[in-house]
Length: 346
Image (cartoon, rainbow, N blue to C red):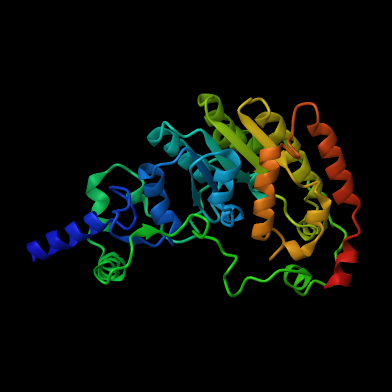
């Protein structure tokens, strides 16, 4: 029994499908399909000088496009649903393990601006903490896992024996949901069965308690890391949700509070010279075209490609000189938009 256990552990440690101990072996093909189990190993052991990180809003990015534009060698490590803290902790880990890191691209999810600074998504299933720490004793959860042995390692070895070339899933394809059979775009999908936009029953104010939450969240999970690493360039942008999302927030009485939170967060982030901050919420041709969206928030990969181009060219970059004007334009447009007109396209 001991010999069998040692043999199982040896197979998993050598093949190492989650890159916990080493980078991919040349003779094996590694399928990238488990963000929270594989991203830590990618961050620790892969060779790169740039990274794309974020929630599902970042999953459709293509590292090949980033590499071509910025002349870098990048990885993509998205965490679907991941909070600001989760993303920031993993950027900090990348800086720790990779002194060559010089560029980070990260969407800042608009809906998470007012989160608690320490919020972690515990509603996405059990988190593989044993893959993220440096405690060798809890690695038993990894190398004594029969599902990993029989469902991942053995098929990989059989493929290699059959002559399948080694390698990994490309980062262009990793986590990319564009080819999912259920992915559809357009007004019918975004608006669903909505028949009206109601006037808000109550306007939610941007009270001091909420302002403090924004300060804590942005300072801990965005600003402090940039200040501590002036040699790394951080290309951050506020996620451009669809006009339908803004309509929902207005109906709930949240629209002005979100914009106030955004304005305050921008002022905090612009204190860092190495944070290149963007927002595309005033690209109204994009946000008002529901054919770009698969729900109120998520856009197609052509928007991800456009965003990379805008980041490279400096389009819609926010500065201390222009961000107040940007906020004014944004506030006026989304407060006065005729949301009922969307229903005619549904």
